[in-house]
Image (cartoon, rainbow, N blue to C red; front, side, top):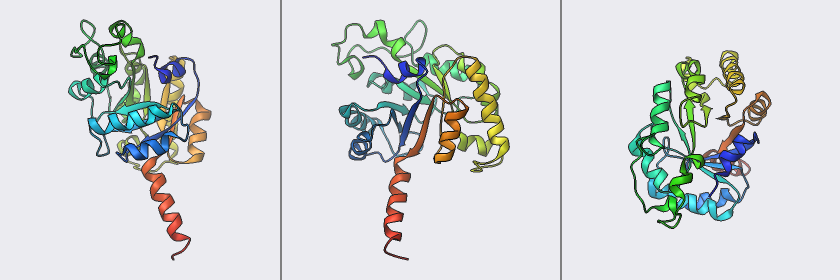
Length: 252
């Protein structure tokens, strides 16, 4: 099955997404009906495990509205391998700071001789052996996004984006602001100067770039300066804010 998220990136189509960390196939079913271009299942900052993300992906895919992305907890071949075997073709790998780390992520997604991905012939990704052309087409259907979260990573963004197997990059403004000593200051001029400079360089290099930002005004700003895919919120934040707002209507 063609990776629609990756194809849209290559076709330079803007895509709006939602971050998911509630770890529930029911909540995944709810948000999947909204029609976001993509939904990311987070395994780094949530209680998700492999079984959870599989059931959530099945719920999202059943609606036919959104592409599923998953973020493993770390840039580790041991964590990446089962995600690929269970059919997750789009990954955002966190904390990639150097070309060498990007190459490790790329090799983790490719079979030998190009990579180090372990081989199994029957798994969910190839419909339990039914997709006879899986091995032939797997590389072109995997979308690997390297996450830039430090000043070092931003400095190395071109080398990272050009590493074999890497489709594009993703700026994490929260960790980046922490690395800059301005944690959570999302209106800081120095933060945005660095972000805009990196976006410009990546776009000149003809690579897609994404981010996650939870404010409507900053989502628009990200799209205006050239981001290709933007996460505009998280399911946990939506639930918390809606609960607080409802309570505040009736209780001071």
